[in-house]
Image (cartoon, rainbow, N blue to C red; front, side, top):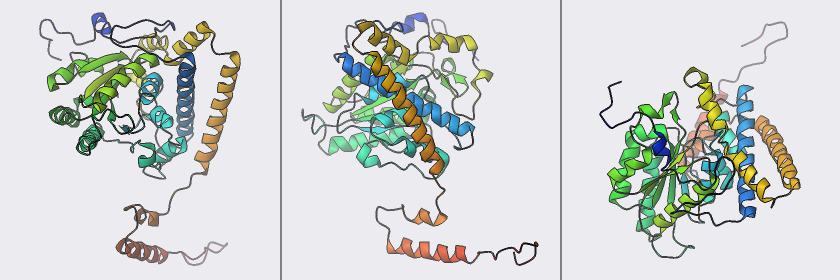
Length: 387
């Protein structure tokens, strides 16, 4: 790698971390920030804890199912629960999400049945949830492509008069999720250009989990990612991605700005991928154990537990019930996953359009007749007979 120019560093420095918006320390202590504040009560915080615990349990169960051969692949969210739950709970009734393939907790918060997430990774469908009803678009595996989709959709909202009316029941915005590795893709930078030029109501939410598969963040950018936004003409902010309260406050502000006609914002949620990039990856090949241990001490779930235990506003029964709910969710998810069956190939004709055309129906019938022509006769018990 070339020697960095004088004054530049190839890795985030401690000074960079002072840019973090943080409202809850890793020890579970509330702190203040001059620009952002969390105004919710402990009941709301307990709801975020439930979201994160259940989101993690979905992730844990799906990982186990993949290891047992029941899923073809799984992209874990472990360690990123606060970034996902905090941003999801900031969404308004009309806001729309364009995810990557890791936003399982966001989907859960928006009403997506977790079994529909697993169906995609089991290979039985292309994403079985209702993207219109949930406002949670289909997962995008092409790195960064969803940022262009989100920007175009946001531009459409503005042209439909759904931005800047001052009415929460009408105004809408878009959130585009992506990882730090996606910021090296052309699509993401093109989306930044279009969003800035057309003042699109979109929040670019980057979960900077430090590793683009096996490449560290230090090989992708010489400056914190949020500072890139200024080059495109819109604001950027870096938030402690393991602090659900700060993520909620920052995303609230960015979405409100977008809905009111203020244009795009880049939110960099500074977090860490505790697990593998996907279940086909072995992170022990490229990162050190002490790095992982450092981030375990910043666990997003444990800091919220610490806050609630200190305040005493949530009794022990809450935690008991939550553990039971997580167990039930995991058991139900496993049962339904094992019941998922592979679709017939003739089903590919049924979901091309909202209503099947006569032309496609004829194609489907022709395919069925063709497939039936290959039916084999039973094989005799002695091994003879037609084949």
